[in-house]
Image 1 (cartoon, rainbow, N blue to C red):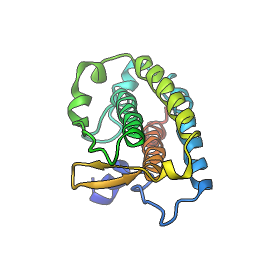
Image 2 (cartoon, rainbow, N blue to C red):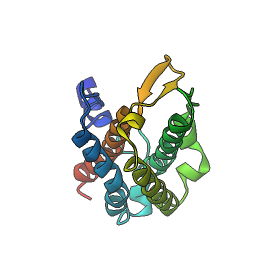
Image 3 (cartoon, rainbow, N blue to C red):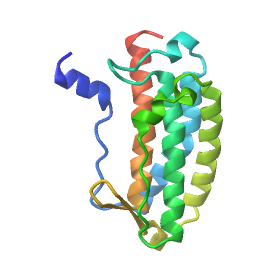
Length: 180
């Protein structure tokens, strides 16, 4: 597979690009995307068989099952990062080894319903929290230790709206390619 085809499989909607200016309307749109993710994901993966769930979405990629569990793990971390940034001054977050987490038994063989329920609960709490933030709170930041990158909460909302859509596109692409 040539590099551009593999890149399209890895990033079917492209990489996240932070807008130069993040408007209140853009934040509302991102919150709506975050709110929609659990239902969109459930609708996409619930009809799949165990064999389909254990199919990688691309060569050397995670299985659909691992993607579902990864979304729950990753968005749980994001929720915590929002809370840290709202309660601490520029906290240094703890990253996690997502590729290693995806190899653990709960992610590699666990029932997807566990993570679908978890994602639904985390997103309900996250959306409730995000809808309550003031414009000043959206400017609060956290620091990612990989490169000491400072991220505002408004950017993090966009990044996680993108992240959910990014993985939905992985699964949708597989379903389309295999005519499922």
